[in-house]
Image 1 (cartoon, rainbow, N blue to C red):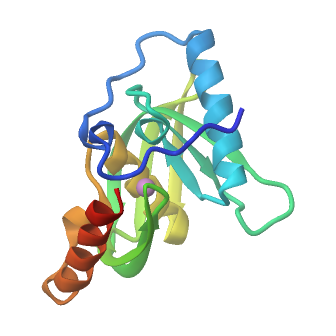
Image 2 (image 1 turned 180 degrees about the vertical axis):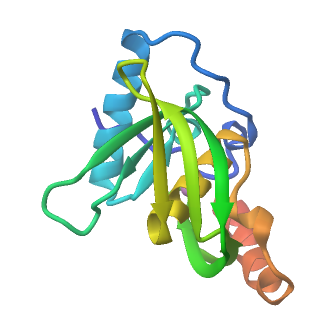
Length: 167
Ligand code: CO
């Protein structure tokens, strides 16, 4: 089921998601809904907070530009190593139309659980590495507006003021 995406300044985006202790129907359903919602919005990743849940779960589409999406549910992720640095524009479905330049490690390795309760390791670089770090940030209550550099501060302030006046 496609579900609404929670938008800033909803406070659930600022809460820390809690580790999944046990896989259950609820988690399977959550992952299904997140995958459908991500595909519908052409997102590369989506975190549980963004659909109103506080489980440490996010989903990834590792082939966003191909006809067949490759979907990876990530449960209780942890970053093991990171390498290099890249500055790129980054957006977020919870802050539509805002893009901020963010410096992040270029390559990362994470470990996590899959839907069969097995551990797996994922190596990511480029866009995918950025998406993984962005989604882990969501699970920790961190948003792209927390990374704003001096030269973009005015732009972000105007954007956020616009949100307040629109609501
Ligand atoms: Co986001």
